[in-house]
Image (cartoon, rainbow, N blue to C red):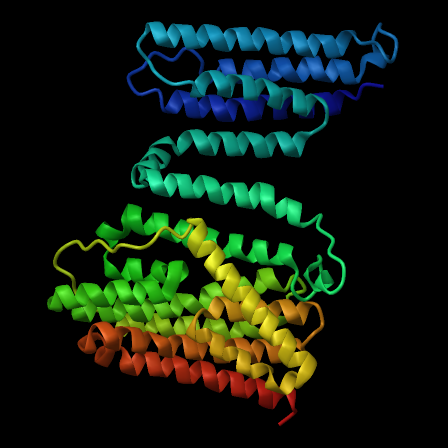
Length: 437
């Protein structure tokens, strides 16, 4: 039978998810006349709820179970709300108010109410929160869109195609020997390769947007801090070139590069979490990497110098397929080398893979963590190799900066060596702990 308490609970919930969207529409009306706001949206949501709830409980009403009347009423309700949305769109057009957002939000609010009526309460709340977040972030989203050029937007679309079309297809692939090591769950899992590339590039792109959107106002420290998430080598090159062109910025550039190295440790820890879902490797690396990140932040602040004028750094778009697949190629090459080392000369030579830090510490960390997950190496060996790789990756910043600006290289020498030595020492400490020394 129909439970009155349940009905009241879901009715209030349907009212709430509609009121949340309506409140946002009312709040952002500006000088416009509100046609659909704090009252209309809850009513539309409640309408969807009532029609769906009655359909779900039609056996308790005068209709026989299995009747198609109530589902039809839900569709009729949808048609009514869609007509309301079209009318709203026309009225807004007549008033000179552009945009399709509110009419579509009205339709989604009705669907939310229907979801509540069919018992999908959590799903309806999630959709409502996401919808409201999207609506309330309008100005910020427009501002983000304006900082991207056509090439970057096209690259982002291509990347989305890789993430949501190609990656799901790789989960269905099944290779035969000798390529079976590329199957799902194997050492060179092709789907895991795509997942890691997507993850690293996503972190890079979010940081890239923040730098483009806020970097000029926040300064070189902000750009350096996020630049380590985009690409610490590219950040070092960009900052060093800037110091070469504007010698008065050498002090600030030093801090920016040190902060970029610091966030490199944080990014590599996140990569380890994704590459080894068991978290065995990341669990070992968490304290060392977080300590290195903290050390880098401290050193970056100690070398901080004032910047009198805004500075804009240029980074390559990390969502472009070229850089993404370049990272993927490095990752798969290092993984293949690691697998050969393990299967031929033993895991005691696995540390040679740390030399890949000269190219990409993230690729080494991803490869080592993946092989630990499939059981090819111990998580301890993977963590030790990851620390050695990040130590080498920190040192290669000295080479990049020395080639471009010797003044910058001299200034970052002490903090960079401190982080590199600390990372190497932590790797050695893990070896001693593993061997009970």
